[in-house]
Length: 401
Image (cartoon, rainbow, N blue to C red; front, side, top):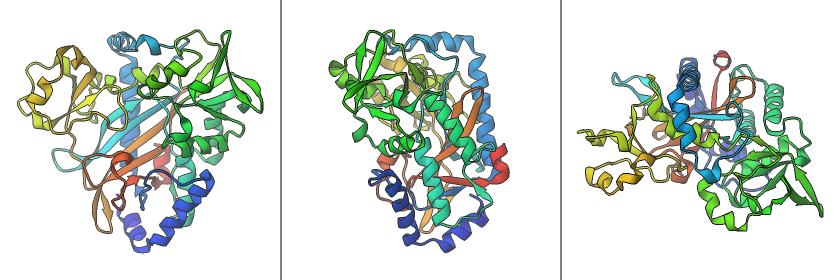
């Protein structure tokens, strides 16, 4: 999106450089990357990055002042996943922005989703380093936001994950973590926090109010959990678990689970901002819009685009029972811009801003996803060149937006 950097990159691009960059990251991980890495970074203009960061802070402020929102957000947490000892704010926050076209045909960021949940921070950090070095990108370009350098990022990340605990007493927990597509991030998180344990909830054991995992032939107490569980994946494994998440447990949360629900697609209908498309709870829309083809339908708590409906019709909505309609959001359709000039045509992209919130929310890094089709997730972009999991660079001044 910055013409001079795009043109320079395209002129110097070779498949060999791309393969070396991906291989370097795979060697760091110790195994092949199970999702597609896009061939090219994107180059974000200062104004666009600043607008996304400004919008994200405005959204945080808007939600924090909306008392009615917090009453309803508390209500929507399922009892089985309502966890005691919630923090005052989420530790991790994600904002996904489509690089879109407004009504005048100008590029503008439009929020597609927000989430009080961590993303691939460690993986993105190392991937960006490897691509920057092996592609010999202009040294004026950066990938860490808001003035962070490498040392500051690592300190911030370790504080968020470990909070001063011995890594041996911290567990990164996800459902069958060794089978997850996000495993490369788990392994690189352990590289940044040596000694960190990676475990499935079924491997943990409860003794009194404490949780333990087995390591080196002994039970080791868990003082803090780096929470990576997607609830919809947990259900099938709950019978094999020795504890329940909603019990009183003597454990800290690196990313308290309640924020998964409170900062989510559930927030969208409460937001009024130029960078947020109009959104409504489906049960509150009566009559349906006459131009239904200009809307999409999203389930509230699904991940990776599961259940998303892009081409709506009245019969499709009529099949949803009235009692279930409060679990869906009707959102104005976003028109992606052909923003990335690939060697063989234009590519769409969505840019994730990844925040860590200790004393204040800090935008740490970006994670673009690139597509030639209508869906942005890596699960839908497995073969087309210049699509899939991306990375972004921007001029130094943009990092201090």
